[in-house]
Image 1 (cartoon, rainbow, N blue to C red):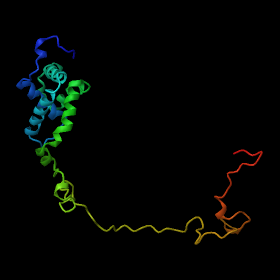
Image 2: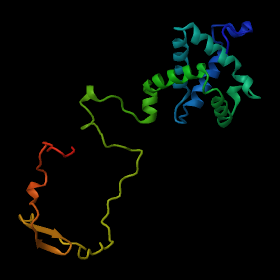
Image 3: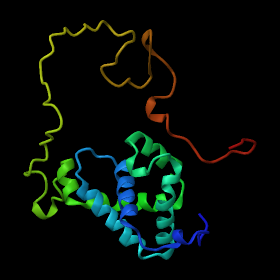
Image 4: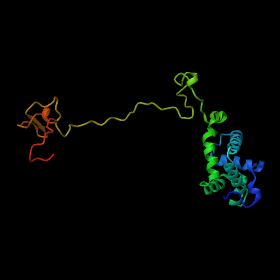
Length: 204
């Protein structure tokens, strides 16, 4: 949206109560947690408004974006069902004002202690001695593990299709699929020996 807006009403810097309700609805639809009450989302709205106060550009973009959001659907955004509201947000996902809302929410929503409690996060543990003796394994949202002995019989393994040496080959002996046989090749200990000197007429 162009700044300043064509209509003076869109140049207002103060958010109305209706605009704040719309903003709260945006945050809930974009970050859905059915177990969360309205409190964390309403506090997130106030945080977004406070962050916007630090920048005239973001404050203007936020105000204009919220005032024009209802034009994207036949009903007011706050009255739309979740699926329809999500489709509207997908249409504005690349707009700067929504990017500002998304970034601010990601950074601050999950710092709310009420959100911690609702999601089962117990908070940092360093100041309390760590998690080792504070229930690091009390994952009560997972089913108890089932530990049982399997009654299935293990398959028997037959003979291998190749010989297995019980010790390293001796010098002068070669081990292949037919078994050990005497050879005149250099012993294994010389495999990685060589010279970095290039004789005349040779290439490196």
